[in-house]
Length: 167
Image (cartoon, rainbow, N blue to C red; front, top):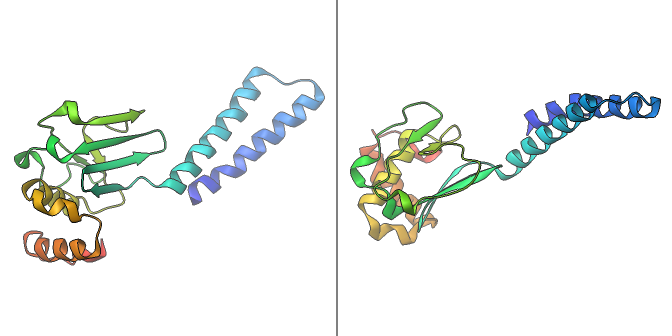
């Protein structure tokens, strides 16, 4: 949110310069393109800050959305053996799909086969995904407080005993 607000100053300055040059009759196409680009950038950043871009585990699968699109991965598309134990980079968790035709991508893709993990612990996310792939009987309760407590208790040992509740 603060990043978007930080860009608001240069954007308003650019729009102000465009208005002044329009009044003076010396506006150019480059001025218009530059001002519109600033406004689009600020708008995209504000929408991203407002909506967020977190990974959501749901009873039907995994969903991640961002300002320009979304990725929905049904549980059936993930083989149990293919979910990595941790992220290959700090900001993403790469996944292999057993049934790629079930995966739905909308808009401009952030990545073809990775989840953004810059706002969540990638190791815990991988462990939770692996758990729900291996234990489909628990998927229906995803989202409930009781299931969250059960998942934390079950993953506490397998996740290295870390305090996973604060992630």
